[in-house]
Amino acid sequence: MDLPDRFVGCFLGLALGDALGAPHEGGPFEKLAWRLICLPHGDLLRWTDDTQMTMGLAESLIEKDGVDCDHLAQGWARRLEVLRGYGPSTRRILAAVRAGRPWREAGRALFPQGSFGNGAAMRAAPIGLFFRDEPLLMEDAAIRSSEITHAHPLGVEGGVLMARAAALTLRPDFSPKGFLESLLAGARAEEYRARLRQALAWLGRDPSAAEVRRVLGSSVRAHESAVTALYCFCRFPGDFGAMAEFSLSLDGDTDTLLSMAGGLFGARNGSPALPHDLLARLEARDELERLARALCAKRPPPLGARLSP
Ligand SMILES: [Mg+2]
Image (cartoon, rainbow, N blue to C red; front, top):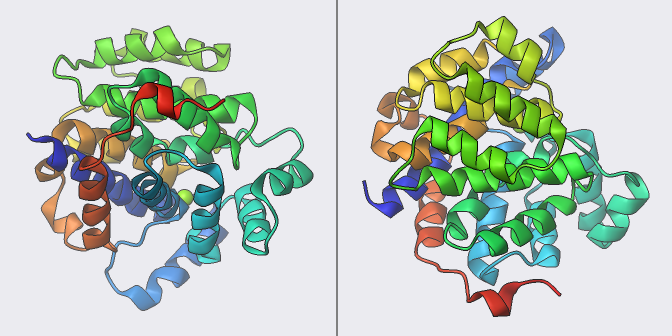
């Protein structure tokens, strides 16, 4: 499997996971609303904010050779569509940016403590792919891109964790155990560390969906969904269908859970391992592929030139 195929796999896997998870998210009202939103699009698999923000991040990385927060915030604000299921904090910050307010000011004014939702984690994969051989640059980029909308330490750590996870899937010596151990070695908050230890202990033991939901979580909080997605990927590292079915059975924030797991699956196995019949119905597949290939063709500038002051 060559590298461009794995970048494409990551982008298509996360968009497909997002689109497959979206109809299952939330209560009866949210499910009905999503059905109505999708109705005019026929059998197209329509994705949500997870994919829209990932595309915006990739586009900005490609154009700026790294994370330029002002450029990134502007790009996200330009792409913002309210019917994509954005969380309320992100939607309000990006709407303020679109109206001309600087992102830092908008975030601080609206959410002084910062959000610890999973919005930074859900879009972090392109950072991991781009900075795959530069862990210090990766962490710096993941932190700064997370802080635009999810400045709480748990929100930021979710972004760092998922960026690191995406990079680790590319390693030739990948194994679910080594992957989770590496992530645990770099994790800081106990909210993540405890869940990563549990995910490791569960490898090969196949706990029920109810137990996974109870212990790891499946909510919109970053620490209650990022490790859950890592676990889903590690439990079914070579079977997208089984991974999707299990992820959806966890309920909660299903689009983001399956999007995060799907991105890792695609990066690990490449685009040919994704279900072709579903990919044929995926919204903006060509645009996703183009962005993935363009990102793959880029390399980050050297370390000294890129670390933030
Ligand atoms: Mg979403």
